[in-house]
Image (tube, rainbow, N blue to C red; front, top):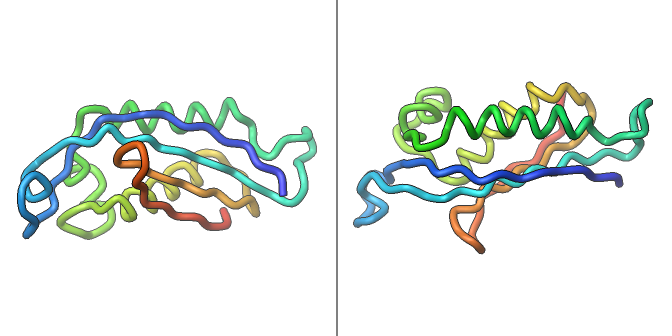
Length: 126
C-alpha cells in the first residue's frame, strides 16, 4: 500500500455541553490535522495523490477554521449541538475528500487535541 500525507495545525474553539469546566465552557484546542491518503497502485503520474492539491485543500480548510468556533462552523453541517474530535475528523474527511478528487483511494484523518490524544476517521473516497 502506497501512502502520502501532510499535516497542519489550527487553533479552534468548541464547547461540550453538560461537561464540567473547562470542557463545558467555550475553550480552545491547538489541533493538529494529520492526513494520509493510501492506495494499492500509483496513478498515471506515479503518485498516490498530488501533494500540492492535498496541501492546498488542508491549508484552505485550516484558514477557514483558524480562531473560529467549531460549534458555529461544523456543528450545523453535521446536525449536532456540539462537535467531538471524532465528529471533527469525519467532517474534515468529507471536506478534504471532496477537494482532492482521488476516487478509490483511502483517506485517513486524525485530529489531535494535544500531543497524544486524537480522534480519527478513515474511508474510501468516491
